[in-house]
Each structure stands twice: as structure tokens, then as C-alpha cells.
Length: 196
Figure 1: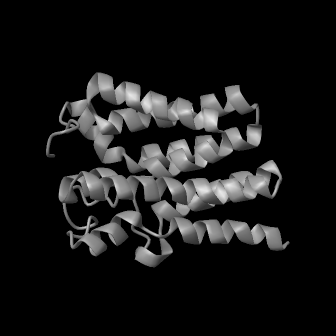
Figure 2: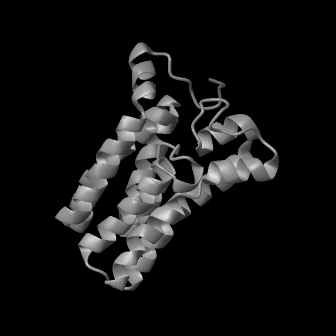
């Protein structure tokens, strides 16, 4: 059916690497090759400052949010809604237009989850803010928020399908943070506001 074209279209939108596009436009180094070599807002902050990082953050979140909101507006079934969200998230992780070398997916996952439910998005964002405020470690905040996201989806939406999508994103996000987890266990992870 034509409506299932939303899935590849969501993947293509997710494949637009905001970090690389913003960095090129601002004349900054390629975030895939400098700093942490992760094309995400945290590395753009390190390489180019707050304005470039903020634009990257918003762009990455919108890649996840907009396709899901469109799917909800069209009143699609939960299976298609979940597929659209996962496709946008996978596009960010493995972008077609940038050699399949994408980011870790934190902001895009937040966008997808916020599209599922504004309350879920607020719960996930609140978890990140609380953990970041307590420990000043971005990766720890992201990992905690990711692990709790499926719980929030289940408690607030009671949807096995959307909970499964949230769990899938969480597992992929945790996998993308393997190096961060190793540094966390060694007590070597950089803190917010400090250079790595």
C-alpha cells in the first residue's frame, strides 16, 4: 500500500545528518573525523560551540518527530507508526547519504518518542535533565533515559507495539554507546562542560 511508503521516506529523512550539514555550512571540521568522531550535537558543541550544537540537536529531534506526527495525523495502525519511528531512527544511525556512518541516536529517539506521546517525550527528557544535573555526564543521562523509555511508553500508552519500538531503539542506542559505557566503568567518561 502507498501509505507504507512512509517507512522508506522516514528513513531517508533520518539519513540527513544534521551534524554534518550544520558543520559544513558553518565551516567547521567534519564531526565524523574530529573530536569524538560522532556526528551528534555533543560533538558539534565541542567543535563549533553552542549555536551549532543547538541547531544540530533540534534538527536531529525533528527528523524523528515529524514523520511520526505525520503518521499519527493519517491515523495509521500502531504497527506502521512504530515502523515509521524506527525507520527515522535507523536513518540517523545508518544514513544513506553519509556512508552509513551516523550518530548515536539520542535526539532522534527523543523526537520519535515525543511523536508517540508528548508525555513520553517529557518523561524521557526529564530523566535526561535530572541525570545530567546530578552527574554531569551526558552519556550516563542518555543511557538512563533510553533504558527507562520503554517503561514510560508501556505505562503511558499501554501499547505492546510501541513499547517494542521503544525497546528496540533503547537497545540500539545502548549498543552505540559501548565506548562510553567502558569509560563510565573505568571512571574516565568526560563531564558536561569539559573537553574530552
